[in-house]
Image (tube, rainbow, N blue to C red; front, top):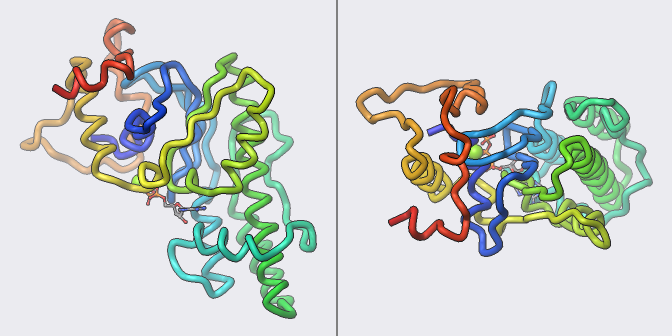
Length: 250
Ligand SMILES: Nc1ncnc2c1ncn2[C@@H]1O[C@H](COP(=O)(O)OP(=O)(O)OP(=O)(O)O)[C@@H](O)[C@H]1O
Ligand SMILES: [Mg+2]
């Protein structure tokens, strides 16, 4: 199985599953991608990170602040005691025309502040709040731009950073009073879990898509998600209705 396909389809296990097509913001520990998802196996990459993922920015900055792994929840807890705006961290690529991301500069900016010295506990909390605000602002801005560019109105969040409460609050605010609908899977479906891999395998089998037989098992790093759809396959074969999920599981 393609590990990211598991992340991408995990929201279908949620109590409030999205229907295809949708834009997915895939924010796991090692990936930050925007994808158009037209059905099982039918994925188009819209934007990607040029360097660190958002999760890595959380994890590496947490380490610089003396917090443990995973850094995302630790930064979020510290940020809750702080106030964004006291430190001015960059919003990388916020104004670029594309849907790409770059987060390595944020970690460097945090390092610079740490080296300058953080006067007290409040300063650490304020820096954590600013870091979280910077990451969330960029993610929300680019995700909304992806919706505008594709003309789709469903946005699905997948991957561990999707558990971030500030990200959820900001996206909820963006959808209020608009045609946009944002789907947040339960936090336990956001981080790595076995069920998402089982679901992806199940849906591929149900759609008649190829899966690797165990005797041909191979490890394939940097496997493009777009290669998962065999050329010429009818589009309808890829679009199971989430409401029929239980039938397919049978
Ligand atoms: N509440 C949170 N706020 C921000 N980040 C969070 C939160 N909870 C988890 N994370 C981040 O999510 C990441 C882990 O998510 P996940 O398990 O999806 O990644 P992964 O599966 O290890 O990465 P990949 O699939 O890309 O190899 C870590 O970077 C962690 O800091
Ligand atoms: Mg993962």
